[in-house]
Image (cartoon, rainbow, N blue to C red):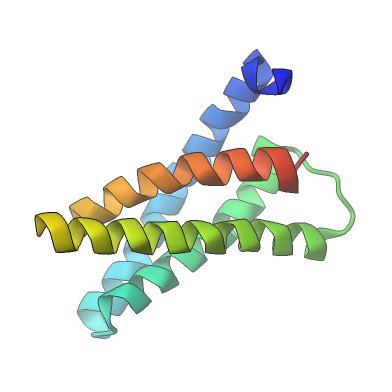
Length: 131
């Protein structure tokens, strides 16, 4: 638990945030193309965008944020994806809740959902996947 309070842990969170910011473009790009151009249902489009971003985020986080040397990449990637899928469930639930309760713009609601899930994803990956 003391690792959470270190400067290194905070620095990793900042790097994780930068990687996540790049993933935001991947997520929004795929979501937009699927929803607006391909006319795929909005929650499925959201899931596609989220999954594509999770994959690019894994690669960048493995190499840059956590500097993982785990030789079992398949297991590590699977752990990362499981955490991301839990995050996707949280993301879709928050998105659904905001859209139902407040009826605001889909993409603004998605931005809020991403912010909440970023915290979940970082803590779960730092404490489990890349421990």
